Image (tube, rainbow, N blue to C red; front, side, top):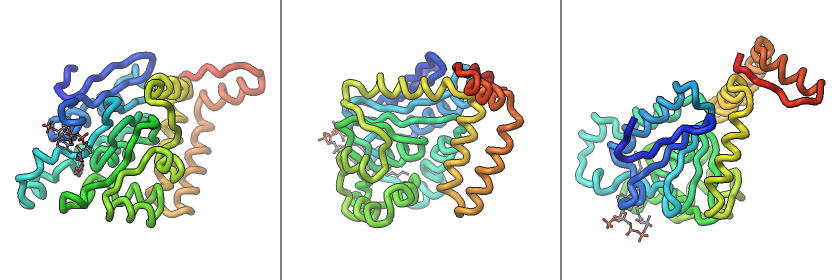
Length: 258
Ligand code: HXC
């Protein structure tokens, strides 16, 4: 399917979804959010896809929600439209692993979108921020919640109250970013990581994602019980038998998602 604000390619089990509004530093407007939620849901349903990578350009992952589109809206409009709520929820409901590959600006709704992904791999030029405070608003796609769970209250408050940008070294140090690569190597490295994940059993990558997300969304004992039950359930799969047999036979496993 052709999109106006995205470029989507599926190759070697990986769907690469690139935000593509270069004139606006990939600011998230309604069209882009509608197309993005449709594209990730299509990738989630597509049997040829085992991992999704979401990226922008070298200059900007996304510079936030489109201020020009939002500026004139009233409370009544954004409330009744539930601005970006359904799209963000649809993206967060994706069950396959989803990596954000971030270069350049990753601000406001852009940072929130990256945090909805399962993990963030960044280039050395990435800059993160929640600058909504400078516009007289607050984050609206989960930023106050996800950033706080990720980096703790103190740094999250700092980011949301000052609106400052965080360089990538700080982002890696505080756990917002899992790995950093030089900008020129970012996409090649992310695709290698995505393909590595795509080689695993899809049953266990999806189960691992569900379990880790429980840590964000539930108390410790409930999360541990959930994880244990999923762990037990995976013993009903052929991939568990194959994975453990391959280990004992000193060979690579051949997973069949069964
Ligand atoms: C609309 C944007 C934009 C945005 C940049 N542009 N960010 N348009 N919405 N969020 C446009 C600029 O207007 C400009 O268009 C072009 O992209 C290039 O941007 P410049 O500002 O000229 O580039 P530069 O000087 O390099 O500065 C980059 C920047 C700055 C630091 C990223 O653009 C900036 O501060 N942008 C806004 C960041 C922000 O406040 N984000 C949070 C938005 S609120 P023209 O036509 O002039 O060339 C949000 C809430 C989420 O995200 C809630 C979700 C529900």
